[in-house]
Length: 231
Image 1 (cartoon, one colour):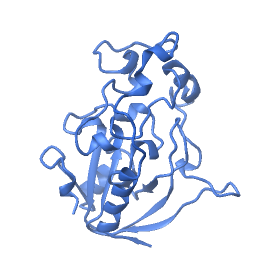
Image 2 (cartoon, helix red, strand yellow):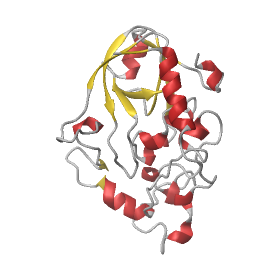
Image 3 (cartoon, rainbow, N blue to C red):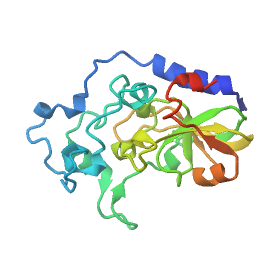
């Protein structure tokens, strides 16, 4: 199965444009809906950047500019806590006693959705030159999606929106495929209070390596912030 540059962009655009219209407000940051909004969190950061001062809960301010505003911001369908209070969210999704250190509890089967028999759905998929893919996460990871996939369809925790490098706001990286690559692909399982059901690609190496090898190139979203870049 092949994915052309046009079809990748079309898929990303369709999932954004077909999302239901919502009011421009971050419902999960409405403190009045929780008796003690920050109960059960850890205010370890005093910068004022993170919800309840807890970097596990992501930034207080969601993106508002193109293209991120429609992917993970107030123009998107993303609701960071899935209707839970912050402490309830951490109680459900955070594991303080994981063997390799405290972390979010990521889904089984590498995040792939399952068929009616309970088997994960994944298959080989060829990404062709000219296709645009993206990810919310450092270049030490190897999961990507068609560029523009809504954050809610990726089943990621709010922490993935934390800025690690100021050149990449909200930890968002976009890449253009330069060499044809066979990747593992499949639907994303619901998790972290998100509906999932987007498409994920497991790349053959971490993104840093793929960039260094010339398999993909980074898109400079500061110089080219608009979707007109993706042609």
